[in-house]
Image (tube, rainbow, N blue to C red; front, side, top):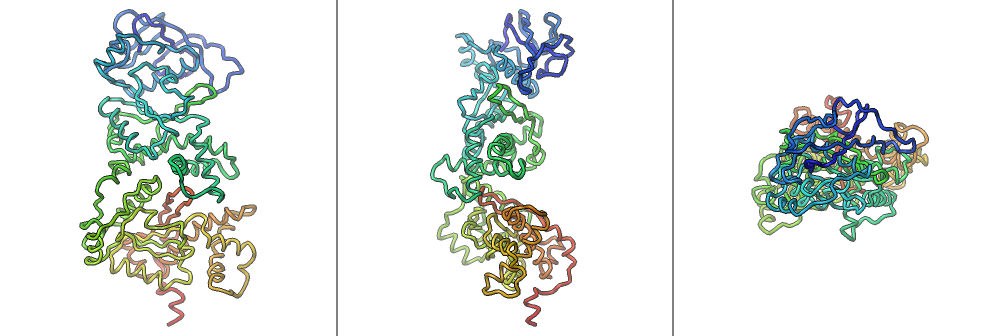
Length: 568
C-alpha cells in the first residue's frame, strides 16, 4: 500500500490513540474542537514521507518521528499481492484503524491504482491481510471505510452481517480466506441504524405482543425472524421498559458477537486456527454518524465457543447423510446414549430448527420396518406442554425413535402423577434412556391462566367446577411464588414469564421427590434430569440445567406420588 515517496498520515498525540505502531512521540497534541462528538475525537495527522527504497519491517525514523512498519507492509508491487508476506493479526488491526482514521478525517490514500498494480494483482494473486464480514448497506462501503487498496481486504457482505441462512457461503468463504489466502485477522463489522437489525427487533417485539404473524411468507421475513434471538438478548440487556430503538441499537452489538460465536462454534478450521494463535476474530461497529469504527475486540464467549466439537455448519452437516443409527433411525439395536451426548443432540437439533435448516423429515419403508422389528431406544424422555405451537420432535429436529414424549397442558405432573412418573420410570428402566428433559414455553396458556386466577384471588376458592379449574388452581401456587419473587408493581406478563420457569423446576422437583427409581439413578449419575424453556418468539430452547433443589431432593424418602399413596 505504501510506496517510496508516498505521504503517509501518522497520528501523533501525547495520549494513546489508535496507532499501535507509534511509540514515544513527543509531538504536541492537536486542538480538538469542542463540538466534536466523543466518538469522533481524533488528532490531526502529521504527514511524513516514506524513505526511498524498499521498506523493510521494523521502525524507521522520518523527520524524527518513529514509524512502525509491520511485517509485510512493504508491498513489493505497490498493492498487496500473493508475493507479499503474511501480516500478523495485531498489525492488520493497526492497518484497519489507521485506514479508518484517514477516512474519518478526509485524508484517504487509497485513491487510485495503475496498470502495473492491476497486472501484479492478476499475476501474483491475492493475499488479503483481513477478512471482513459486513452488512450490505450501501452506506457502509467497507474498502472505503478502511481506506484500503485492492488486494488488502477479503470482504463478505449480507443484510445484517450474519451467518443465518448463509452458513455455507459465509463460513466456507471465510475458511478459504484464512486457509488458502493466509489472512490472519477476521473482523465482523456491524453498523448503527442497521435496517435488518431494526426490522428484526420490531418483528420480535410485535410477535411477542401477539400482533405479528407466526409464519414467514418470504426469505426476508425468515431472516428477520431468525435474528429475533439477537433482539431477545438485547431486550434482556436493555432492561424492562426499554423502547424499540434502544433495544435495536443494543442488538447491533449483540449481533456482531452472535456472528463471531457462530463462526467459532460451527467451523472447525476457524476454531483450530484461533486456538493455535494463527488468527484472531474481532468485532466492530461502524458509526454512520461519525465515520468511525468502534473496535469491540474478541467475543466474551470465545473460550466457551472454542470447546465446541461441531465440525461443520448445521445446514451443511444436514446435507450429508445423518447417521442416527444402524438402520438410519434410532432403534434398540443401537447402543445407549449418555446424557451429555443426548443433550448435545437436542441442542444441535434445536439450532437447526431455529435457523430453518432441518435435516429430519424423510423416512422410508426400511426405517419403519427397523422401528417395528428392533423396538425403540430413545435417547431422551421429554415432558412438554400440549400446546400446538410446540411440536417437540420438530423443535428438536428429531426422527422417529429418538424422543420419548409426555405432554399435557402446562408440562406438569399435577393430576397426572401416576401416568407421568410411571411413564418416565418405564423409559429410564426398560428403554435405558439416560436424559429426562422438562420443557416449558413462553406464552403458555395454562400458566397464564393460573396467573390470572391467582391475581383474581381464585386461589382462595375451595371448590372447582371443572378439571381445568382444578388444574389452574393448583398451578396458581407457582404464580403466587413468582409474584413474591418479583415483588410489587410487576405486570401479569412478567409474573407469567417467571412462573413458566418456576413451573419447570416444580415439575422436576416433583419427579425427584416422588420417584425413588429416578431419584436413585440421578444420585448414581446414571440419569440426568434437566429443564428448559422454548421461546416461541425465536424458535430456540433456553437450557436451564438442573433444579436448584436437586441436591436436597436426592435425599428425599418419599415413595410414591400423593394420589397413588392415597389409594393404598
